[in-house]
Amino acid sequence: MLEIRGRKDKYSFIHHFLLEDSQGKKPIGFAQYYDYSKVLEEFGETPQPVDTYGIDFMIGYKELIGQGVGKQLVRLISEKILEDHPNAVRIVADPSVDGNKINVASIKVLEANGFNFDSVSGFYILNL
Image 1 (cartoon, rainbow, N blue to C red):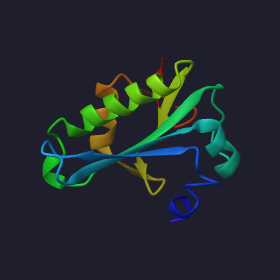
Image 2 (image 1 turned 90 degrees about the vertical axis):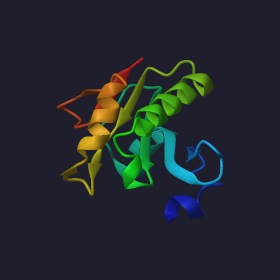
Image 3 (image 1 turned 135 degrees about the vertical axis):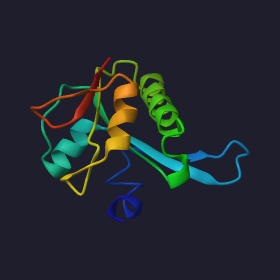
């Protein structure tokens, strides 16, 4: 809720996107990207190179998991980062849930998009 309330000031560096069904009638997923250095300042995360961007994503319906929707969503958000920030050097994602549960579906989506696990940070990383 903090991010929503602060989306026009403190959290304006976070870019939010809804994924709609093929008819454009209902949202089926969500993604966001952000300048990782801003999160580092806010939450004290693991340092990353300058021009690193973080992503978060979710699919809103269980029946769509494993259907390629997440793979397409991560591809699109990654392309959007490069379109908006051509000097981007890295994209990072943390597919854990509540800090300790592993989200296997998200890991498969990230790996299908070229992300690799980094044991130092615990993130999945795509070097650009």
